[in-house]
Length: 291
Image (cartoon, rainbow, N blue to C red; front, side, top):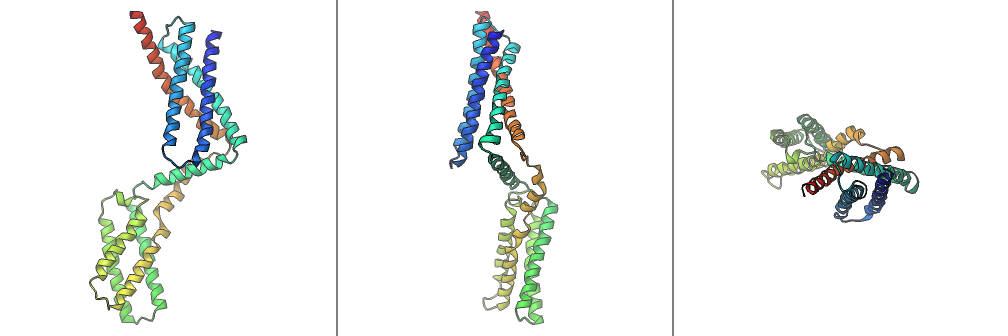
């Protein structure tokens, strides 16, 4: 039994050191600007799990069990390899985040925030959110209209005409936005700011096109809509949702929590690969018995 344990600890240690080295490589891979490097590391991880667990169990089977092993025995021995690798990776990651690269925790936390923000961009806008943002956008248009009236010398008649035209553009825009089926590709958190501005400017262009170029009031209307739409991003639903939900992002406060979080993947992947490897070695045993 001591020989079996020695063999399993040996291959578990090799797996743990190899996985720790990959963690070190992953740190330096951040500076590479090509997408293929990440998948290569993940593939190497999988090959290490499969290859070293297989070799470890097979060596025990061939040297200590007369080339015959059941699934349960193979699984238990593979599990010892995985646990050994887990301990080594956990110890290394504590050194990695707590001693060698002390600033790495902040980098990891910032990456988690960035990934969460990017995933959030794909979320759909709800009907309530759409109506809320339309109300805020209307206030931006009204603010620009009031600002123009204060700065320009416009009599009451022309001011009333400007109000009517701005309201007409807004009604067309609001009706169009509310008539769209939700969820849709354009009504995602990442697309809505750009889409809403482009939509109201398109409606503005078609509406203003009905009037002659000499119509000076159309210039005022265009200025109000364009300047107002420039401020749509001030009430971005994406930024608001991110502000409300960023507390869900896992942030690591110390090297222990980060090490435990990342090294648990060794247990999860290890058990998964161990199941298939144990089944394979058990099937090999059954074929030898038939022969």
